[in-house]
Length: 52
Image 1 (cartoon, rainbow, N blue to C red):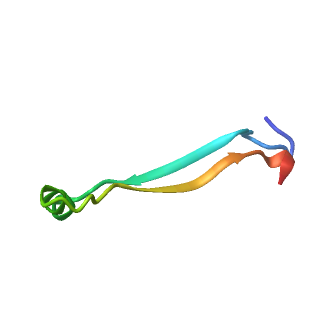
Image 2 (cartoon, rainbow, N blue to C red):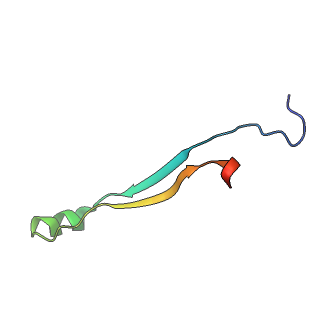
């Protein structure tokens, strides 16, 4: 058991990104040569609580 205020979990160097893939309409548009691509959202990058 941990004392009050002690972290239960510690993580370092966390990076998370989400990809919104091309939907059906985008794939159809790509068939016509438009060049629609997936969208990437970088949520967090190399998070380290010691440097916050």
